[in-house]
Image (cartoon, rainbow, N blue to C red; front, side):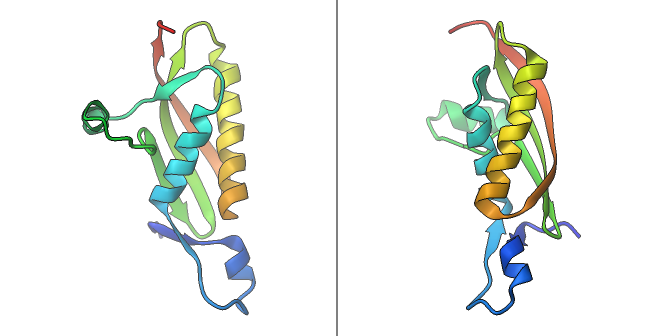
Length: 126
């Protein structure tokens, strides 16, 4: 069952709390996008045409290029990014996978078994 919200691991283990905490998939997507952008060699997230138009209008969409699938305490992340020219794609993408997984697990308590990356482009400038 795929859901747009997920209970945190701590909440599901300890039902004696004062309420429940649910995390929207959009929040997880923003965490993933921000984490990926912190890795040296990543130029930007790559999105679809709608996301590109939103970006040109000056609106920030931090979940651009990120798809999150949440089910039963786990999160699978698919992301598309643009690389900076001159960086090793295997090294940078491995760092992105580790950083995204670590940030989501630290901030939400959810388990991240997969971070799939599609390199959509290489930026020659900068």
